[in-house]
Amino acid sequence: MSLLSGFKKGDKKALEHIYLRYYKRVYLLSLHFTGSPPEAEDLVHDIFLRLYRGRDKLSDEVPLEAQLVRIAKFHILDTLKKKKNIYVTGFVSELQTFSDDEDSENGIIYRKKLLRAMEALPAKCKEIFTLYRLEGLTRGEIAAYKNISVKTVENQISKAIRIIRKEVESM
Image 1 (cartoon, one colour):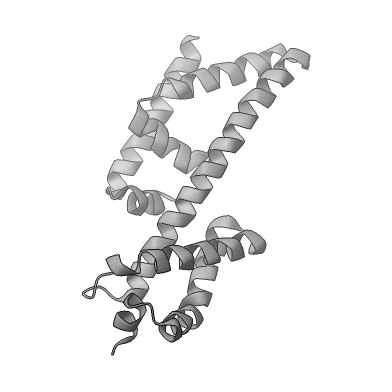
Image 2 (cartoon, one colour):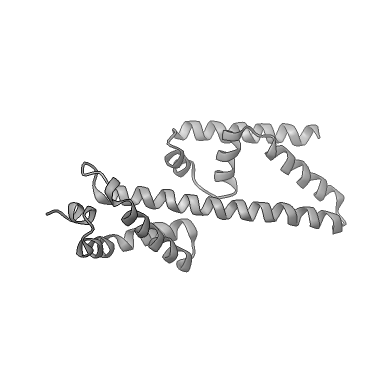
């Protein structure tokens, strides 16, 4: 019985072997995206739990490591995306509170224009721009995550910058 087939049948030894074999790879991937060892550790456990829960859906045709890395990347990006949305929402409300108290009207006006311009972006363009500028993903990482070409990512980023620039200047 192969490691994958044993794992798919719920064999605890197979699970242990997979965990020990791929732990470091998944941890380093998580650490690369988060920059935080404790957060990376939490993600590793979540990823292996997700792998275990979806073990019946694993393909016998694709190497287990490739499937695990794919699951890990999507889980990491989804987790970071949720955290960034919380952060961005908090940032916007902080910015609005800050704008009431701040002396520099020019800075406040510019920030408000920038936020309004970002909200006006088309959905796909806004999502790619957010992944790139706010979440710090590379063009290649975005392309892999969205399953699109790097050129498409570059075009969407350029389009976003053009629209934002135009919107801010016209306000």
